[in-house]
Image (cartoon, rainbow, N blue to C red; front, side, top):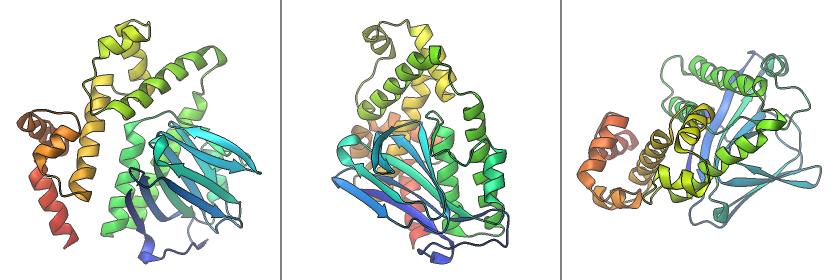
Length: 287
């Protein structure tokens, strides 16, 4: 299992702070590979708020004792003292991001961004922008540079704005089939990103035109299918560089590139440094 998390002043225990309107307590990500199950049960909930973004696969949540299977492209919000019971399974290829926050005006801020008091599950769609925002929060809370607390609030508000836009653009009944089609495509890409995927063949198997698929996929995720696959492969390569001892050639093959030189060029173009330099940077930062 891949874990990357950060806590304000390393305070793992939850807390509430009403001295500021909004304050980020902690954030992180879980990605299950080999660990079969990751359960969470807090019968009395927490003192702070929490948003969980299901980035890939699915997760099992229980609300009032009833199981709800939440697929990628949704977020779950917990409020203070609400019972929390949910499970992640490796078989579901689950990857989630989460953020805990508190403050003296959180309820009104959530309402401002369209998140009503009764809402539990927020349909947001799958977007790499969400993932980038969560990773920026993790990065800032890990380094704790000047004014990082304000920047964390800025990232969280950015996330809330994107959620608000998604709520306002909630698909009508006649577009639910389209949403399902795009959800299936995203799920397929996440489960098969390390294989050779031909967009034309995928569209043909789904009995849809290539142009229709590319146009609607971009509207759904803000990027084309090819760009989405590239970002997914590079993101997983970054995880492998950080969490394993595989060399660059091995990682190149794992994420779906037979030519390590071509992979390195793509990686540098996306990340700004070569895979070797990226791993060196991580090692220096860790030290």
